[in-house]
Length: 304
Image (cartoon, rainbow, N blue to C red; front, side, top):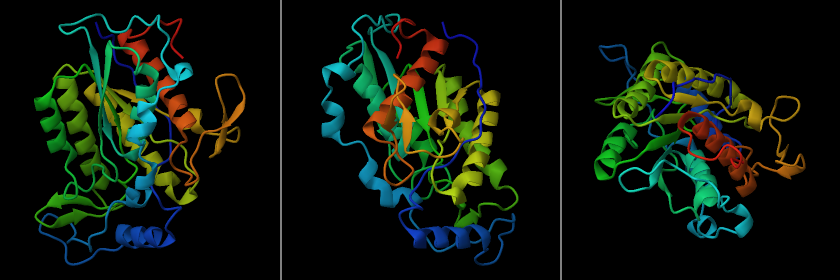
């Protein structure tokens, strides 16, 4: 039986590809601070020129199928993990939703549990997406489609990497990032996604944004993490912050972090946003420990 939800709050940083494309950063700044066209009757701003979400340039950091399919013996989950208390099919199904970071977290969890036939890890992440640009990809609609396709036992969500930009309101109207009402509009979308899952009896775990190297994205990500934590508290979901876990000794970005044995290891990708395979496994271990605390999925003595 699922225990009482808890909400962990911490500031964290966003994720995207600004470090790779300086011109994309400039375009982002201009779009986020300059109204294009006349305001609509409800105060929304007329649409800016279309630009793809920031993570388009980071598609290369999606987890390759051949990488997640190859599970070395040392990466496999301990054979003693009892897993989920058998339900109708005896399988615990975890669905992972979100952007390119979510795809990496899916890879880490998949590698850890691939040899455990009592777990099914569904890959529902989609790179270069988020909740702001529903004209590009509508996550609320996609969620309904996924839930109608197959039942799930829990949901793991990571978004925000591409969301510090204009929110599409419909009828060619956009609300620019930083303008009055943006936080409320974005939080409403986060809350709608969490509530849809929680109302269906699906334990929901929302992963906070990690520390990144680009200082220009710090405040945006802190802002989003505050919205996630606040919405999670209202919806009864679990917010999992990653700031402390992914920060170096100074509290800032660090490419190398200690592994489970205290040895310094390369955990972050060259773009200063995503993670290495080892880094994603580190995050996955943390996520599984949090889920175990809520759902008693694993033997506490063997959770990484």
